[in-house]
Structure formats: structure tokens, C-alpha cells
Amino acid sequence: MIRINLLPFRAARKKENIRRQVSIFFLSLVLVLIIAFWFNFVLSGKVNTMNRQIKETKAQLDKYNKINKEIADIKKKLEILSKKIEVIQSLELTRKVPVELLDDMSKLLVEKRMWLTSLSEKSGTIKVSGIALDNPTIAEYMTRIQNSKKYLNVKLLTINQEKSIEGLELKKFSISFKKAPLKKQPK
Image (cartoon, one colour):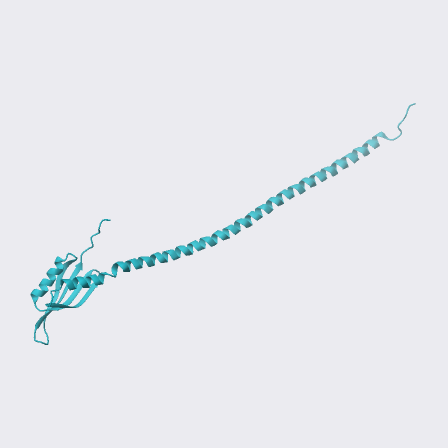
């Protein structure tokens, strides 16, 4: 027996083709949406990771800025302390100078023949004033200063005759000289 298909062949094929195209379209649309959501998920994860790294970096930067500020404060304090130490060392070096000068001048005096009335030192120049019994005593004192090798350029500034209560004729004098440069000792 022969069978004859009475249904329109082309119309059924057309419907099937349309149904297939609609299915492919929806499947493609679903696939594109899945890919878009996946990219969105991956990119948002990267953005979150970057934001977290930025926050951590900012926190570290703040921490290091605080440390740098503390270091700067410590450096300032250290600089102030080093200046204080320099001042103390300078004072230590110069505190004995007036005592040594007075000691030297008293050792160089001609005993019982002269007396010092003033002693001053300004920028390396020393000025001594005093009273002596006579001119040779003053000359002896100047010679002693010159021979001490600690002092240079001994000059007599003034010499005046003065009378004391007991009728003695005394000589009032002023002498100036300079400190000799200190010789550095090898270490």
C-alpha cells in the first residue's frame, strides 16, 4: 500500500526551521549572558583585589610616614644634642684657660717687687696691668713672659710714676702680648 502525505511538506519544514532558529537565538543569548556575567564576575574580583591592595598600600604608606616623621624628630633631637655636646666640649677645652693664664702670670712675677692689678684676655691678646718698685723689675717681668714660649710680641703700653702712702715711688705699668699658637701633638 502506498501512502501519500497530505500535509504540506514545505510548511512543516519552514516551521521546523523557524523553531530551530529561535532555539539557536535563545541559546546564543543565554551563552552571551553567561559569558557577560562571567567577565563581570572576574573583573569585579580583580577590581576588589586592586581596591584591597590600594587600601593596604595606603595603610603601609601612613605607617611609613609616621615612622619617617619619628625619624625626622629623632634627627632634630640628635642634631640639638650634638650641638650641646660641641658646646660642652668647647667649654671643657676653654674652662682651664683663664686659670692657667693666671697661674702663668703669677709664676712669672718678680716676687715682692711687683703686683698685678688687672689681667684681661680678648681674642688672643692679653693685657696685664700692675705696680712695680722700679723699671728693671718691669723689664725682668717682660723678659720672663717672652722667654716662657707660651706668649709672643710682648709690648710695654704705658709706664707711669706713682707715689704711695709710705712715700715710695712706684711704677704703674701696662703690658700686652699674644698667646703663642698651640703645637699639635702627634697621636
